[in-house]
Image (cartoon, rainbow, N blue to C red; front, side):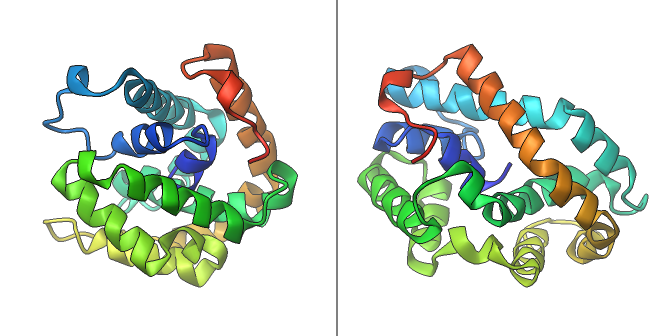
Length: 202
């Protein structure tokens, strides 16, 4: 899962949104110094990643990638799953995508000062450039893949991963709602964050 899905799974609070994105930026962070609500969000992020990586749908999809791109398949699928969440948005939320993104940007802004520097830079760009709805189109997915590949510090074929995505697109799009329901149920059962402050339809 990428940024949009992690924020969707987060509780609608500033601490939870911060924690649920922190998983991608936690290197060097002293977890014990964070508020317990942020720590819980971070643990939720890690739980989401573990569930997604081990799910049969993800394992099958990774094996369909060409050998030269397979090492980046997990990252590519994370980006693609945000696109599928938008495709099926009305199945999971009563809020419009635009209203949801605006609310999450506002919550993240409240915790910018607490974020590690790398996360501050990314979240600031996310807010200023409206990253969350770029996943709406497959062209946007390709743009995100290229942007992510540009940060890889060695020669790779990651940037062209959309070529491996397209043969899988219809099957993954079809299977995504069932997968995401299973993920939501798994998170609910683990109960790492206070369910009283979270509505699955926000």
